[in-house]
Length: 501
Ligand SMILES: [Zn+2]
Image (spheres, protein in one colour):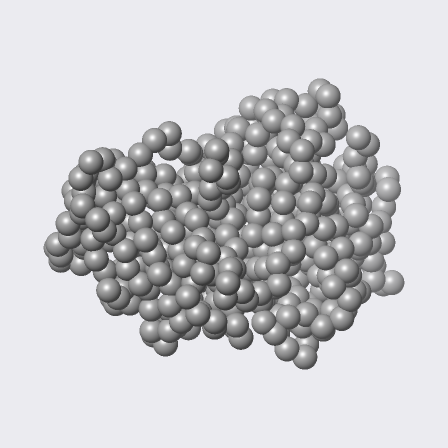
């Protein structure tokens, strides 16, 4: 029996043009508030290379009894040699194990058969082997208290045997410094939506980018101004061929662009798992899962080609997702609309693409969203056209409306940064309504509420031809030109211009 996370989203590929080739994106999150006391500590030990088994020891605060289960019900099939620790007792009840302890602690241990799990599944979000590394998720292998005093704080450490074998574990879990050193932890309620982790032998590099709020202007109300944020790059087999400095430079530069927009990179610590495809170049696919800390999985060609990397939008798209709350299925159009719209704007502001190429792309692709915008509304849109292009059209309309009604004083950026600073990053689940309310309040207009009443729960007529004319975007016999006398030409230019700091 297998239960997949309810919040898992999958996206498909679009084709061609500057901004067009949207491919697989997965966005998922959980909540991430720290728990003060109680909870469990886990020690994970990798005993062999390549990883076939993980030995797990746990100790929970309190005598219990605790009902231990696994999120996906997968662990049941692959748990071996489960047993109580000193002073503890264990019994079986249905799919679960009941543990009770003594003297304030409940202890137990089991081994998890990774070979067996991989043999029964071939999904990268569950477990997949790539050479001497494994991509998996803690939700695939963790037994944890599922019904008592939730949420619990689950702490993790990695056993010494792992290091002796040259094995490593990379996660995006939260980190806290204690007198015993740094601990990694997540909330038990985030386990079902927890992101990727990498085990085994893999290349690991840490890139520093400006931290949360660190680039905020003096007049901006960022609740934090942190030093540096970390991007942990975990590159699994077969590795990358060519100049790694070019690759690292591209990831750093992309993260810095996102940091500039959000006035600091939106998460303290992000795990970026690179899955190379042999003998190819370019970027193929990206996914984000953020429960317990944001993780991005990027599939790239093993041959590093600088021009192809900087021309591509997938990494920017995925990193932008980290700066907004996860809105589940009802708000998928808003999550994807933000990422598509911003990846385009940020790409141009960086000087990596020409503005005209993006505007031509918008004119070519945004009509694909009209069925949803004019029909049943974005709230029920499911395909690429409605979700991605209907969503990004909504965001373009919103950005224009905010700029017009505030005389250029506020922008969509003010709205999105306020949402982020109100705690709305990708590890948090919000409703689209909450996000739009915070946004409208931030800029002092009813832009989002009004556009939502027109295009979300139902559709309304939308004259895109008129919008392009007002923006001064003209298709003529030579193909395409801009008209700087058009009523919204100033806004068109301002959208793509890097604002002064
Ligand atoms: Zn996306």
